[in-house]
Image (cartoon, rainbow, N blue to C red; front, top):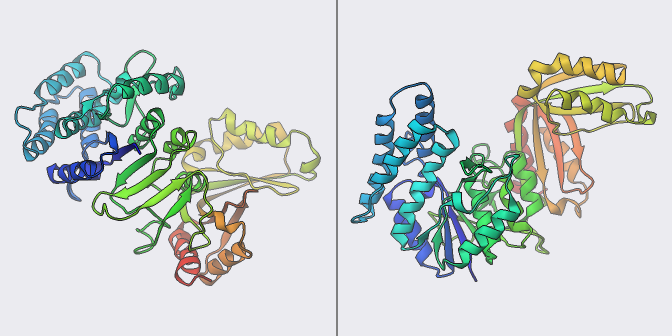
Length: 440
């Protein structure tokens, strides 16, 4: 049973954490491929190495001398190397090259990726594994998206030649051969890509929590965790703000039928959460998770006999597309159509969008409301449980939360609820209480 293991920055912040990670990897001979992130914070007042590298880029772009920046970053790595007692190993040449590259061809993606690159070299040395530079095996196309075919072919061949290897997370190379990064949290995606290319049995993603929690612990104190969730449930929750796993990390393993196991570096004995394609296991609770975001607004378009006008929705949405605004949700009625968008994307273009809708559709009226928070209540158990929506709205009513929007997909996997920004935390607590604390 071969495994790919990915460790987040909090698991690799210092030498002590590195040793703990090393013990975890060595405890299971099936953990053959390792994907590390850059060192995270050692304490609450510390700075992540990736943030230090981004600051270095900003300073260099502004024409400042960044030699001290690089000295500070190197000191973080030297501290880890010394703590691991890696005699004769040094990143001196790597930092010289980084300094040269900054002067020759300043690139944000290149600099931001060096955190994972350097940490990967240390990890390979510490474990005695081979080092594979992600730039040589992960490829992006002209549009900046992952070139899955080329990546799987080249990476798969490379992994066959290395029984044990470390592949840094977060980056690959573009069509011109330059370093290109995924979005923040992209090491999760790298781990998933490596798992798919290597055709392993399990992708273990190690972080600082024991699996997936039903809701944000910053809102509900000590929320319960889930033993098993499906890819579809994870996708819904990640999209709405749940941050245990990068939302794009499921695709490479989902297509290969590889389960993901979320584990806790500080509590390796915990089972964590299994993320799977499908399961017949019933959760203890009706819902799998609650997640949400603030900062949305709604555009309510009203027109009599809208439902009988062919192409009305397309013409209305064209106004948003022409202004570069993505649509989040679109609950509709017979004579009404509501478009939910991110407020920060929309607010400076609202009048241009309104004018375009009037030109395209000649509606009776358009109303805009802001300060909306969206909450997704997700769970495969909702389909087979009567009265789920009723219990949600009863809980919100008892908590004196006004519901401004409701949107439920045909799959019955999730219910989206819109509330005032100021009621967001209260609403999450109320929903958690009725489904988990009291189990009504």
